[in-house]
Length: 230
Image (tube, rainbow, N blue to C red; front, side, top):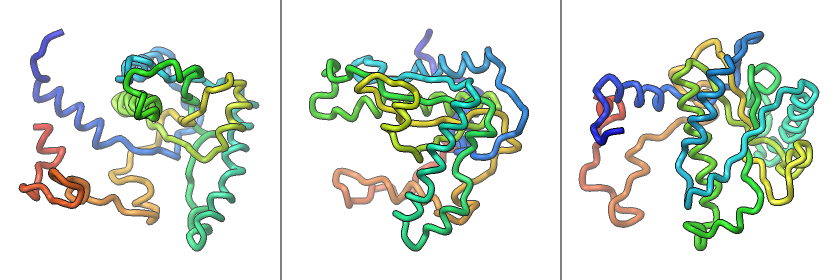
């Protein structure tokens, strides 16, 4: 391992994976994920940074079809509850396709491990850093999947206690995400929720301040990710 920067071609590949990552809900039926590819993806997830090197992530691969259907039913029960909470946008939400649990080639559940209270390093004042660490692992898996030509979707419509019971998790463990993974028909050039008219992604300039929350940086324009990849 060296401290040298990546070559221009390697940098372009990294930025391409970041820019072309999408939250996928539609999968190519009947397609599988090669076992060696899946192993690479999980190794990428496990290589994520974690606060205090606590590695709080746990991955459950769901291979039982009956269990997959029960997880889907759990998510389906949450849909009308979310719609009710959305008020006037409820019907619009119910028209969206928000998961591909029954169609995806691989189904994974990512969880926070039990006994996390023993990890104090970096968490004394910010105990949620265990969740931040798990999120890094999920992002690693997502980007690696895109580089392999696979789509992934993050499903968060579920009751965590019910999913934990369904998967027989120990006390203290918490499910964070249901991940749908597999070959997809295509990768859209925009986020699915933009295409569906649900929301529009806002520009980076609205999220960067300097020194204080409301103070814009001195340079109001910044290079795009495409330019940074050159």
